[in-house]
Amino acid sequence: MARVYNFSAGPATLPEPVLKQAASEMLDYQGTGMSVMEMSHRSAAFKGIIETAEADLRELMGIPDNYKVMFLQGGDSLLFATVFMNLAPNKKADYIVTGNWSNKAVKEAEILGDAKVVATSKDKNFSYIPDCSDLDIRDDASYVYICQNETVHGNQFHTLPNTKGHVLVADQSSMFLSEPVDVKQYGCIHAGVQKNVGPAGVQIAIVREDLVPEDMPGVPTMLRFKTHIDKGSLYNTPPCYGIYICGLVFKWIKELGGLEVMKERNVKKATLLYDYLDSSKLFKPTVDPKDRSLMNVDFVTGDDDMDKKFVAEATEAGLSNLKGHRSIGGMRASIYNAMPYEGVQALVEFMDKFEKENA
Image (cartoon, rainbow, N blue to C red; front, side):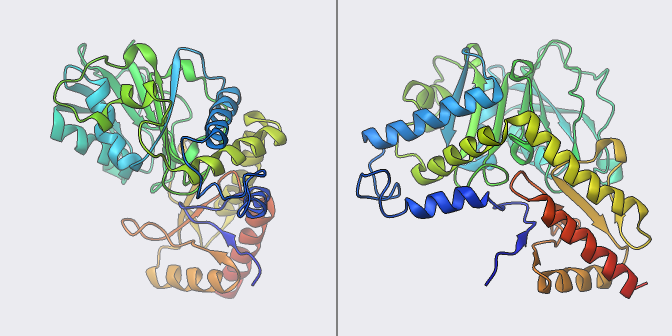
């Protein structure tokens, strides 16, 4: 069977050159006589894999030397709590809630301490980014937290909030490596790789070293950032194969020309799809134009039965995983780095055909 165009929000499509290289090395990684899945995380071969992956990531993002990189497990769902434990020593932090994931983050923080929502777009079902130019941030808040791109609701911060001198922490999972970012503007960036970078099971955290506590009484060893930083993400057995795939993706992005080129590619794809949606009489985008995500495009027909019909027929046509998140319905096309322009063209052509047939 031919490969489909996979619009899944995650785990998501990966670059074909990466999959082909991984396939060619499946039984014998560079003369070791074994798969990366089989090798010890203490081996020289894997040490080379993880160190090269970090070096390439640092080069791609321009990560300063005073920021530490961790390859972790547990996903965002664990990081929501871990970030608060490590970066809010006074157990106080402020949150901007713009969708499903930032809402989950603040709920986890509320279990552990004093988390305050200083802005939200819940009133309009997270269809926009609130004005964050003059927020009521508490003087003693340890950080201000955002989900920079909300995967479920399809909105994105295109301008960072004014944190009034406070540390900015960002969940960048569904926009990670999709465009250049100035790492120095953040105290911490964390991202699950299963959207844009690799298979599920790896979480990347980038944190400014002066924010990492030396001692955390009462906090389990595995929940301390310092544990993983001190051991180069090798305190315990990491998700070795996932890290290997991430490393191949980093190489792929570098070969294409880096994050500036990646953003150009992503803007071109998103523009094609949003332009069609804005002209359509059947399909409607759900997010304010100024706050639309480049990665996750949500849209509806306004009729649940029509939405279901569209998803079913699109699937038959080789356009896979277009059903919207269960919490909001409709459709969602995730057009991450590895989605080719031709995939978005095929989607737009199918939507146009569907609209004419169902006018």
